[in-house]
Image (cartoon, rainbow, N blue to C red; front, side):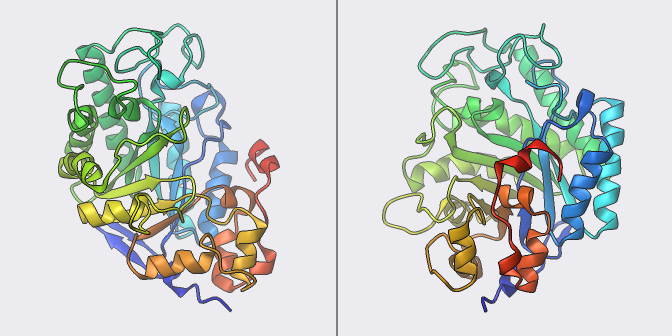
Length: 366
């Protein structure tokens, strides 16, 4: 029987104290009518907390900018009604012994004009251009950038007041913060544009503003990725040296944990090393890192639990890398959509009861 004990070791950083290394990855559900989490959303997170998920990172929840969301069913993090709903979520998760962080989000140019809860609003973006150079809007003004920084900081302050255990900023997958990172969409000639380091300035300002508005020991997590939804093969950094140059200013600005999003956790990030993106991130910054990417998705993976296979994608290899200190925490996404008891079943060695991911799970909050 596979020894999963390493996954269930505690983790502590600042005021965050986790009973194990399993993190529920953020996944958009669009099940919050009018942008406010309801009792169904409360129950959805409560069930995962009750079944041994160490840290829950919520679905993306949008900040106080008119163009931040592209779907009225996506939860907000700024109205009184939405904050009251999130308070119920936090209390329910804590009552089951879990910990929780909101993922604060602005979708940027991923939002088509005329969509979302404020169809009249323009879509914020660094340069008003899509990858490839097509112009679809205007660059954000300094006033709009300042207001966006304010909105992220205010959301983080509200999260701390509500009782969240950490804050995650969504800087991945081609959304607004990531659009500033990406030279394909950031063609600015001011302080927010230029080389890769200069393109981190927008994120740095957000991180510093968030840090200034929350308790000093409340961890800030930054989710980032090389890949984009518009381009799975995109790479911000082509080498470890470039990645180090990119991460250093973000780390210095106040990131405590990096959530390094990849599509498959077992793939090496650069030639000449087996380290994945989270492994390189931890090595280069010295900060804790969350790995994520297709953990527990299919029958082959479940077969590896049972000793039927020893693939690079198996849980045995994941635990081996965690035990070696390559990364500190393990993000589990779609497997937890289909099976809210995934973490409990793995802990108990009930591998034969694990359920395959099924897209039907996306239709409701099971």
